[in-house]
Every structure is written in structure tokens, then in C-alpha cells.
Length: 489
Image 1: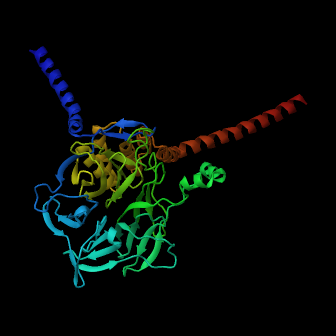
Image 2 (image 1 turned 45 degrees about the vertical axis):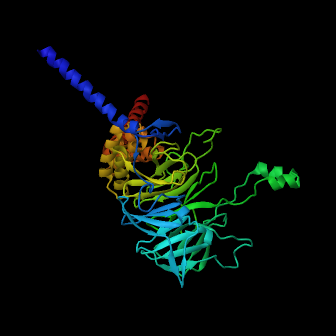
Image 3 (image 1 turned 180 degrees about the horizontal axis):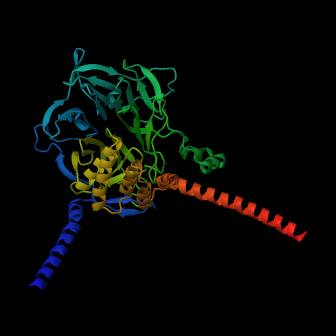
């Protein structure tokens, strides 16, 4: 009987371990894409799946009809969803449960009925005013929450604008001071800024010119026809933008193989994006150089939440890369494909609470991605750290490590909490496991000072004793030598 109980206990233990192993695999089995992250050594490591596809909004069999070439989506603080259905020249409004609220297809402009013409960008202020980049009408339109026309802002007028300037607004954002920021198609001068009255204020955040010395030398010796076929030395244009709670502008651009595909611009237009992670926030590190999906990640949109976490949408491979405010890569999800939860031509991203919405122009639909246990734990850990709740953050990081023992960011997060509590020696262990040389050095320095303070009295007593012994010994030798000289005489 005793032997039978031992066997049953062993069997139950094995079943428990097996079920624990299958838990993350179950989530992975439901995902149409692999879970991975990058290590300190720039290698891909398997990772738990952070987000899984949930509900899909496409308009099929709905009263408002099918979507057609949608270009942008915006989520308000009240979790209302504003969808720019560009192919149908309309705005669709939904609540957070994807329940249809209303459609804005036309508005009265003066005495005439007006409409959009393939708009590509939308922004809604906290007080409900709607701003639309009405691209082919070459204007910005401001509406009330109910869709009533307020004003339109046309082409900027100024002596600083270069000759041949064409105004096709594609993306838009409005800050708390009602300043309006517009990205224009084919504009390399930077982001167009209007004041609250709609007057042109200037350009901000112009990208620097990409300079290739080899190409420059080749231009010197090339013929006129060859030079005409070569690319110009012009700045890279922005393709999207988002505002954080502090009024900083996050931008993306379409340049390949750049170290700054994401920027965070301060009021003077300077990039102040933190890059304290293992690698710069550039998307995929391991890339193919041939094939349909070759090349670096190409970010097409960006979204930032209220605790500094930002997610960038990669057009090239259909992936969402999410970073914390220090530039640490938290997780990756998404993929191009034909399955549910994959994309054909992703164009926009927005957060709906903890969920993530991805707008696919190719499939004419929005997919809601819901956080798994792993993704939710990571989000909670980062949020509590941002709020200064270090111990609470560490508790969540411990739970993350139970699901993914290779997750280096979690080790660093726990190490930071231990460092704040003065447990420097323990923090060193976690920083070493997390491959954080910066924080390991900081913890080691504090631990060394701690040891010195703890043993200062003992060390100084020893030093004093040695000094006293040396003085006594020298005095003894001097007296002894003097006695020997007297005896010799």
C-alpha cells in the first residue's frame, strides 16, 4: 500500500509539471505567430505570447456596411473608437465593445454640403473636437463631437516655405494648448505646426540629411544621366506621429536601416528618446537580406500610453514592437499572413485600455488583440515601476519569470527594486542574470561602500594597532641598539 501511494504521488507530480509546461504552450498554439524576444547578445529567444487576436471589426453584415481602405483609428479617453474609413470618405464611431454609435459622412460648410476626399489621419481632443487630415482636399477639417463643421485649415502661408511646396496632409495630432501638428505627404522640412488659431508657426523636428560618402564620390565622377538616376541627399520624411501625456511628439519614418526609426521630440524639435535598453528601438535585429520580407523593420505608426510604454507597427513584417520608457523591448507580436490575427497591409495602431487595436487596410478590418497572462503581467510590472511602486513591480516581475525564465528585463526590474531597498548584494545577482552592466556596476559600487562602512571600525582599529605596533617596535629597537653600544664601550 505504501509503495502504491508513492507511485500515485509521483504520477500526480509528473501530471502537475506537465500541465504547467502546457499552459504557455496552449497560448502559443492559439497564436498565428511565434513568440520571441531578443537577448543581450542580439539573438532571438523563444518567449511567451504577449497578445492573442480577439474580436474583429470589418462591417460585414452590419448596418454601416463594409470598410473600404481604412487609413487611421483613434481611441479617446472614454474608450470611444473613431475609425477613418477613407475609401468610403467617412468617420465611423464605436464604443469599446465595437458597438456602432454613428457615422459622419458629410457636414454643412457655410451654405453648402461638404464631404471628405480620401482622408488619411484623425485625432480627437479630450473635449471631443475632431480633427481630420482631409488629404485630397488639401486641408485640415475641425468638427464638433456631433460632426458639425467648425473650420478648415488650408495650405500654410509663409515666406520660409520653399517654392513648389505641395500640401497633402496625411497625419495629425493636437496638444493640450491646441497647437496642431500635421505630417504632409512628400514634405521633408519636418512636421508642420499651426497655432490654436490655425496660423502657420513653422516646421519642427526636421530629420537630418542621410549622407553616404561612397555615393558622394561616385556622383563626382558620374555622368549627368547617371546623377539624375541617383537618389538625392534629402532628409527623410515622417510618416506618423503621436503625443504623450507630457506633450512630447513620438514620430516614425520610413527610412530603411536607420538607427532612429522612432524619435521623441521635445518642444525645440530635438530627439530625446531614451535608449537605455540592450539595443536601440529599431524593431527586428535579425533580418533577412533577400526575399519578400528582407530588410529592416519599417514603422508605419506608433502609440504611447500614460506610463511611457510605446508600441510601433512594422509595415514590413506586420509586427508590433513594444518598448518601455527606457527603450527596453518588452514583447513582440503579429505577423503578415492570411490567418485570423495576421495582416496584409497594417496601417495604424491604437490602445484600448490594455487591449491593442491594429487596423489592416489590406483586409479592411480592425483586429482587437487581448493581453495574455504574460503580457498583462509585463504591463503591470512596467506600470508600477513608472509610478514608483518598486516592490509591487518586482512582485509582478517574479510572476513573469515563472512563465519565461529567459526574460532578461524581469531580472533587471527585480534588481532595481532590490537596489532601491538597499539590498545591493542581492541586486548584483539579478543584474548579472539580466546582463545589465550599467546597473551591476552601480550595485557593486554601493555594495563596496556598504562593506566599507560596515567594517570601517574594524579596519581602522587594525590600522591603528599596526601603527602602534610599528612605533613600539621601532622604539624597542632604538633602545636595544643604544644598550648594545654602551655595553661595547
